[in-house]
Image (cartoon, protein in one colour):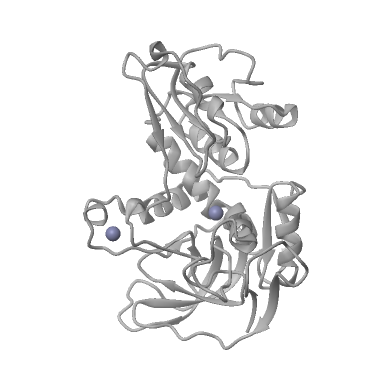
Length: 338
Ligand SMILES: [Zn+2]
Ligand SMILES: [Zn+2]
């Protein structure tokens, strides 16, 4: 089979990923062999390729937003049949024994394994997936549309929960990239009033098209006190900006792995039981719930499609900010089907 593999991290030269011919892997007990239809490309894949995130295994096949079909089933797996469509996402497995895992907070497991980092991901014609983390993919979403939901979509959904969003709430979204594009569709589906702060006027327009009641730049004060907020920009001052927009008792969830320093703020902005929460990784329940919801809404995504062997172009375009919507590798000829 063909796989775009990373042998050593570094600048995105033509040969940073090499198109290797490797044997189709055999599923071990508990695993599924998946024929990949499409795999979306995430900023984390870029960080692993360049070495911003030190690779944990080499060579490795990146890609942690893969949609495919079950091609073979390992011993002891139940609930999956050949041909079933599934999604593989960032969480590849957890220890299952630590106090976080047993309490249903497996996103905090210190021994978690990740797809396309600890084990081979979806930039290949086949991949192995631990059956216990695989999620079904709803009908109605073609592979290339469903793939980008598996990272930014799922984490945006978790962020809405971390912010305590309830149906009908007034919700603020600060920053409006791929993850927020999914979050607004979920919030609108829940009947929330959505307020969007983003610098880009094109993104403000897009937010209004998707049902935001108000969208403006960061310098304009939010017109109402918010019941919940999520920040998507990796910038500390945006968090204080969101905090200052909250009603009493409300939470701002910070959807960022890295953030520069949060500037000093007046304690009055936190008083009245306001909270700042971070969002780390996802659980398999987040992925299950979100993918089901994505099919029911159904969530619309904008994609730029690349061939598997053009993965390096996709990474470069992502690095240069040239991708409209999400970059997706169409791995199988059936990638545009449901
Ligand atoms: Zn990702
Ligand atoms: Zn654990």
